[in-house]
Image (tube, rainbow, N blue to C red; front, side):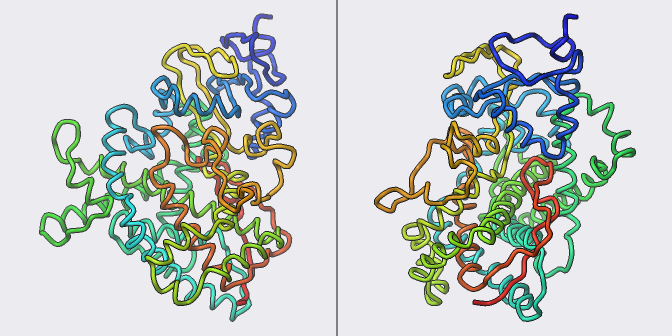
Length: 488
């Protein structure tokens, strides 16, 4: 049989190891079995093959070459950046949700959006405006949610709370709108729909036949595959409402805002025309996933680690006690400087969380030309290449024998400074020209939250929980994070 160890029509790659496969359908049964634990599946593959790069072939899934080799990752994202684009399967799968926004764009379209957005992320805004907003939202959450939970001895869903905190903060910073989701009980309709749409988009990415299979699959298995159409309508309606309202305000001269949305509304597209509502809708949703999801999830995984690693929490609390006062919290500019220059262990805790629980656990690109990676792997034109930050963070080849252990000290040098790892080894904020524009914003927001909450509250993990990620484009918690709260 010609295809006894791989999917039909897939080219045999004698130069690459691959997991055990079935005739004609490749590794499809294995991936189907691991569908809700897909990142562990890739991690096991690296461990069992004892390689940092391997080939994967499965029915319905584009043939891919997957790597965790730091030099390969840096080569893809930085050194040979122009050769690796999003690719047709990726773009088609992402189009309904993200359209032509910055995550789905290539070439000049991507450069325009990045350049326009970059004007918002400057030091003055970080020192003055951004810290102010984060503290304002944190103070509301502290007074109206966490204090009450502590007084009433009530368990909270910390994961949902962090989504509301980051959503309110980013919608205000990015679009000048007070969403006030922290004021609401229960789930926020826009946020729920956005989460479901992301989950559906991820399944599109790993199933090249989704245009045919998606609708019947969502009817048969709705608890696994959500109805994309319903979720997208809610998401679209919200994004268009925000853009149309801001356009009307600007037309009437009611705002001189310098937020992200206003800057794009004042910019012109490649044709020299103002951006359409569709273009603005795409921009809004792309920046929402960047500003809300990644930081909320990182904070959730961080506090899961803190509640299960009391020694780390004690060291962190000591650093906070030594450097943070009530007076400092009332001065946003001074607080920004202290966080930036004195809170090294807090930075280490956040970075270590992202090492084990990266906000984007799996990513892919498409090769435009043949290439050779630093580890000697031959890449052919049209190959889909994948790197797994999730598996990389757990690799002993990359991080040493204690790779699976949560140890923030790995980020602290002998003289107490923060260690800087290469972006190929720690691609938490991507690398190269597409390095995350908002990495410093996300870090600042996370550290403000960590410092304020650890300083004032003791969180305890409620027993009997199944803490695991939800399959999605990012790394949300499937069942939330139930914590009890008490004041220190």
